[in-house]
Length: 202
Image (tube, rainbow, N blue to C red):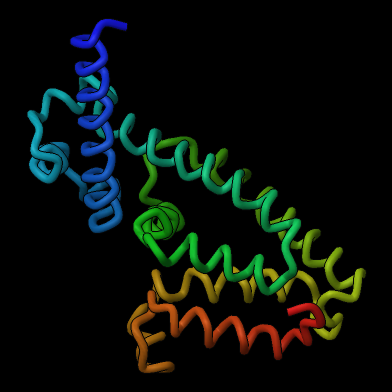
């Protein structure tokens, strides 16, 4: 590839990434309905026409972000299955809270702020949740975690602890008096969850 063409390709890739990062800021703060392409372009420092050029508009931007999140999640889940329960839970916490913007998109979607096929989205989350329950059941059967609580409840609790700092940060601050996104929160709830579930290989 000629040097000029290579530089142009690299510049285009950087521009796309700036737009996507700006869109993630905008969508996570205001939801899909409240986000504006002009505001995204301003955040990214680009001409608004570039959003249509690269992504076809606001909905295309959202779909690109969701696709990248699904890809990251698919890489995380196989790895978490091979890890002990507590390490797996910490991986999910870290992925969710180190950059909570994507988790905020999930919250907006749960509130109905989604332009795509809501039934397909609901089916996808049911599949994710059912797989998580089965994984918990298998861990209990293997004796890795105690069987004193139904696997459905254990799975629900794990999801709630990961998403509560994003959806209800004031509640977390009121309970723990720490930054909801902090390492301290993650450490404290991981240890508490391990004790609550009688984790045997923490």
